Image 1 (cartoon, rainbow, N blue to C red):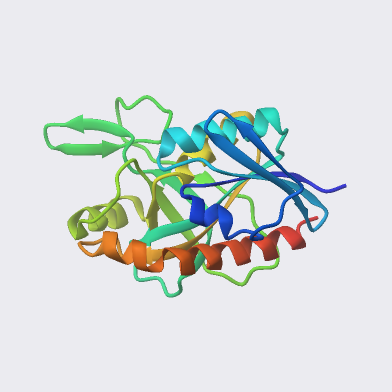
Image 2 (cartoon, one colour; image 1 turned 90 degrees about the vertical axis):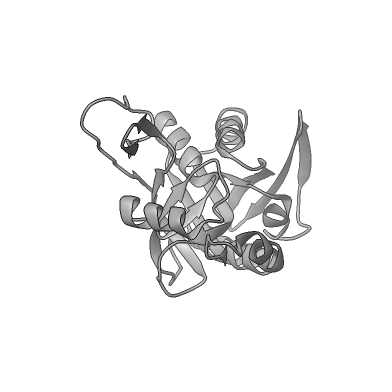
Amino acid sequence: MGRRIGIITGVQEEADAFLTGQHDSIDQHGAFNIRRLTHGGHDISICCAGIGKVNAALVATMLAMRYQADLLMIIGTAGKLSQIAGDCFVIHQAVQGDFGAQRPDGFTHYTAGSWPIGPASIEAFHAMPLPGLDLPKVRIVTGDSFVECPDHSLRLREGLGGDLVDMETGALAQVAIRLGLPWAAIKATTDDANGASAGDFQTNLLRAARLAAAAAEQAIAALN
């Protein structure tokens, strides 16, 4: 018996790139379209949640509750923080880069969902390993801001050990952990989280979306 996989993306192009045009049905729930299909013997519900952590958490919860997803996954694009080689990656750890305490001497990061009081501590959310992929494994930092500043990129890389940055993965990971579900993520990079990020994102979106979707298709087909 296959799995029930709930997949979210931040933008529509990322969702459309996954098994483009294929569906068994399309459901509408409020502002969200859920494309339902089967792949590799697994039931898949895929939805563009929209940008940001609230949207990601909302749709991840909906897929878990309404569609009984037993694996939550996010695919799509991200900015690159580190010098790691490659342009498509399996996420093995996620942290939230904007959760913590703002203090006179700067911002102190804490594990998302914990009390942001007392000694600082960051524990990453750990993803489920994905089969069938020979891709680098990286840590992603999630926050509700699009990074176009090399100085902030440096802070996320050095302070949180981030390789990539996005606006959704950490929220999906937190929902999955709270619900007792495994989660997974595949991201392809569009930009270097610097002053050219906005233009690079638009230029590279379709190519990166397809890279991540193709890797997800391969991994899901190899799942037991």
